[in-house]
Length: 228
Image (cartoon, rainbow, N blue to C red; front, side, top):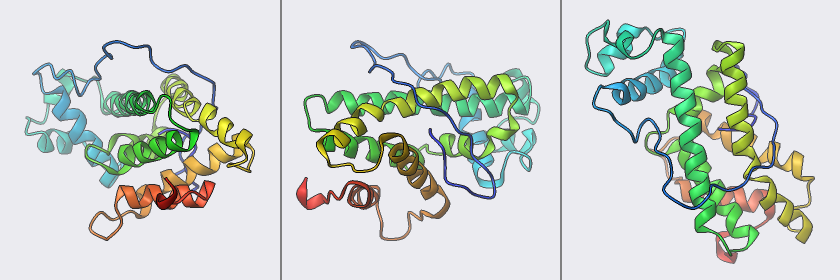
């Protein structure tokens, strides 16, 4: 997920934004989760992501992960050299999946207004953070300090690609006067606020992803669902 998260007890990783083009037309490359090769790698990634998110990287053992994936305690090491390698794989997969989903959302919005494009970006971001299979990016936001320098650098590059998707949309809104804050600060504040939702969102309560999207649009660009 991208971007700088709001400050918390576990500081998130930050990244700079660079302008990046939309994905070319054609069949998208599948992520690891979509390429289930039948060797239980996908099960391990999902189990690890859920446990790293719910109880933290340090408190999670490979035995915990193997049990959650329905495997023998030593089986994870057939697929990953260490728990650290598994953590990086979770974050790497999360960012690649988030990038693919956001590029798809923008592709579907081609020809639409910058306001509609921003709504699509915000809603997809909430889905990445809070929807089904949403443990991957929150783990990246709060456990990046457990990675080595090379791994952090690779993830930072992916984060920069993700954040760059927002820049042209925010720039168009700023040019039209719909966004009054400077684009760079607006990006940081917007993504920081959205990322913080992983700390407080409770799906058992009344708010939905659509409700959160409406609230974010009203807050940052004064654009309500009724005016869409």
